[in-house]
Length: 268
Length: 173
Image (cartoon, rainbow over all chains, first blue to last red):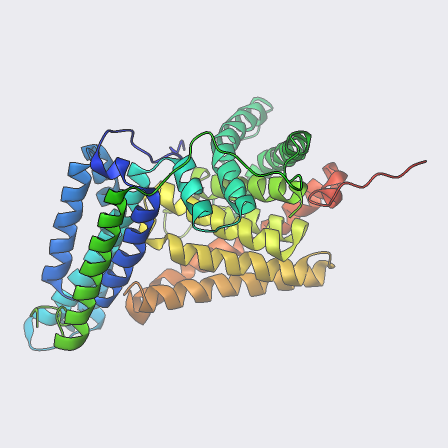
């Protein structure tokens, strides 16, 4: 199976231009809000707004459909489970022992939609931010540079090892290894010759990588790092940050003070 | 942190991510698919200890979740797989078969418990719905026992594994 590791979509849009730290703040705040609110109309509105966000950032339709296709079965499963196991209120219809009520239907839909909405929040960040900028922003947020480098190197090596797995797999099949043999434990046992060769190659790569870093005097004392491409907070980024903060504060105030969005169907 | 450990952690994260995202394993009972990520996670924990195990398992599996489209589950995956990596490494690293098996079992159960509680409460599956996921998660961590076999095979074929991640030392002779 071939998987695209870099989710970034290169476009010229306002979302791409924003500092990655603002987008990370948006992700964190949005997830908190989505976990606090339990209203179906709120979730639907959030989902529509997030689609508008993706559309305004010129994210292609197939990327949006990818999220829908992947998470739709999970969302439907959650909805069905709530309807079946947690009936509340008067039944609309009853099929054998299963009572379908309006409240449980709405609650199930809220929880299913929450999974979708949270995913669109995360992908708004990942689709509009390239990997170096993600790592740079985490380092700017005081994550030690070593950890930023670990993340950047890991992302760099994933496609390499993906290719390595394919090459070793083909080589072992040329030596008569049948990789479609068995299921479950049997299949993993069959794949073991590929895993052993791949892991040893990867560990050798780690040794070479360490030598390359040492040769470039990585971690040398008394040396200040410089960057070819740096990120900086512009006035517009401050505006977005305050707008996100103010909106979140208002929504949480309305929720805690007036019960806004606490019920599955009614808004107050 | 020394340079060798940085390189080792990066490579281990990538190994876990590839095994989770790229290698499908058919489930005999359901006809669906799972992944052999636990094999890589147990291997890394047994070979390099709890810290490398936790970082590689947690971040590797979370990256795989993101690229496969399960972005909303990535935080839970980070914690669940990180717990497996840490506990497996803590109990099994540089220990005999007893310690390694205990590490695999305790780490595996921690992963299943974290997923169960997270899905039941934060993600809204409810306890009944989260219980439905238990067999798949148990099967996934069950595959991890082959990580012990992978560790033995790699150690035999590549004995230098013992020194990876350690600071390089030179002795005058």
